[in-house]
Length: 175
Image 1 (cartoon, rainbow, N blue to C red):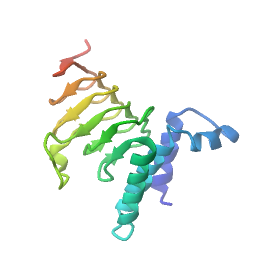
Image 2: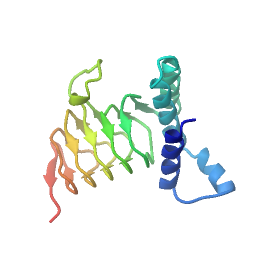
Image 3: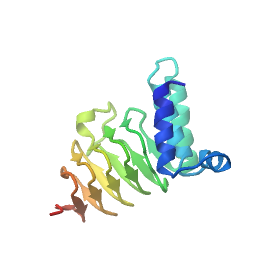
Image 4: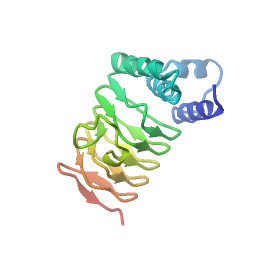
């Protein structure tokens, strides 16, 4: 395994809290870690033309087991946390480090984008939290440490540290 995969998985595990011994082994099969592991394995395989078909196996396993659909083309930083996966679609171009995404979230293009154009998909910066049921669409950016409230619809960029809330989302900047 490449060092980058190991360092990513280590950061992902650390988001679940410190553990060693038996507690670490339990975290390795935790329903908050296994989906992230499948995402990382899918991305690793997608990076190799030879292993690309296996990438689809890991993606499909996530859909079947956890109700989580993630494109292996999305660049995902360390420390990904998905507390509850059901009904979540991650079709973003990029997720920064320490991003938290709750259940029922959709991140993707405004229109069917079968070619995966990163410019048509959202980019989430470090420390972003996306609440349950939120929808983030289009070639926008969600700034560092920004929060998208539950059940909000975001189609415009959100600045660093701001809160996007409502349908359509209204951005509230912390003062």
